[in-house]
Length: 114
Length: 113
Image (cartoon, each protein chain N blue to C red):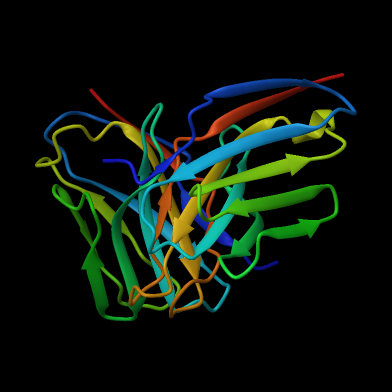
């Protein structure tokens, strides 16, 4: 049973517009969330994170929003650039666990068209 | 440059053979992990190690084995007991403890025929 879900396998956006990638989770114990970006034939690279004590975290063009009551987080990319085309994974974990375990979604493939 | 290396990038094996995937890191991280990625699925944890000479099973450890003799190295052996070994394998490392970002290697694509 997947505890972290990304229901949109793909998303296509025009360059300069906003990209919104969504992620839902089921375990209310999760209190730390991350987004990773993955290019083909490469490993995922860490993009941005958010703790459950916040509802928003911003880093340049990337902003992650967390809605704890809905168990939902989203990644906004503004403005989108062709180099942002990649697969984006969300991951969730809990400080209550005794080690650094994350549960990953299945990924959303973003295509930013020039 | 600090990072994680995995070799080889592509690996082909015949069914029934054991195969070992290499993972090395020079980030001075205590914790290391092995994940498997299948099409349409998220990364699933195979094994993890928080310290040298210690490792624990993840969610899908059956048919796999690991060793952690050195801080820098965490090789994964895919044994003939693994029923569906063809997959993309990712190694990661992090600071040990609770909740730190994990840093991933480039992955090894294993094909077993």
